Image (cartoon, rainbow, N blue to C red; front, side, top):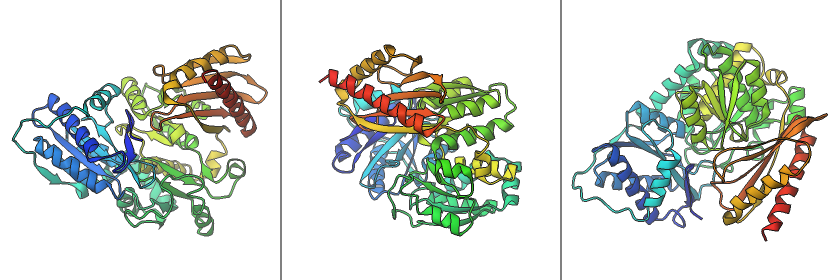
Length: 480
């Protein structure tokens, strides 16, 4: 089924992503770009899926025929392509990728001239127009330039500048060792050159471009094998990316009480917390603000509070975080629920920069990552994906809200976004500590309703999840 949302367009290639769909979006985006500028230029890049090159060529040909200049950056990560829009002063961009979905899937994100994904208003307009979009009468053709290698080099400089001279010197002196698995995805084209420049010893796995030796999504199951390499090679950590490189997952060495309690896979909540710790520890500005989505753990709030920073919550969705960060001039933000750290001037989560800031923190402190994590507050998430017909999702959310308003020990009910946004049930602290239950219908997977809980111990997080699922089932049964 074709999924069309402000987070991007996704579907099965040929089945959902037909030539008509590709053409419709290319024409609608062309019309959008030409409203702002007579002769716009667009950056187009892709991940390493089998269908990405074909989709890119089809889109590129339509842009050219519509008089739009094209900067083709080939295989590059999502963060690098977004950087390319800013670096090359383009008027927009296209990232061809289905991120963590399996290879038979594909899709794209449409970018503004800032490199960020389009606003909800703009992408909604393009989605509505794509079926009726028609070629223009313009006979002037756009030109094409290939700047893939140039972008990769520019992006590496951007990463190095983000870490700073002192940070780079610290990393070089620390002589860190990392096991790396980009799984043939877009991070493959950058990570080796970057690590060689900063003196990190790396053991590279799955480096053949477009060859996927594990499932695309980097998770506890797909990266379990890295634990053996981290252990046997006495590495500081293992790192695995998804296909477009915007998300990194980290495998820890088994050398502390933290891994005994939390496991070897570091959760996205802790990844964001580490990034917040590193950024705020050096931040000298007045806007001590961290912007997160409302499914981000209280862990991040505690780390931010330690540095005197305020956390502002928005609805799930990268563009929601980015827009609020720009509005508040926040130095850091992200989505802990999806391993997403966002560090300006980047306007997306960046798996490579996220890893670099964690390595910088380790190098500065002269400690293993587990030693740093043992000083962090303890938090656990539990989650499940339940089914709900899309047409019932809004009414179900209202019923769940009313359900919890009638229950005892509810401290607060928070809502983000519109009637399709997040719903967070914050319970009064108990002897087990604070805890919340979060609900939201997925906007990228039709018919999926997500529930996430957050608590200071795993047993309480699981208990909250069971309570959340019961409320969901009770409310859904009333709609049948």
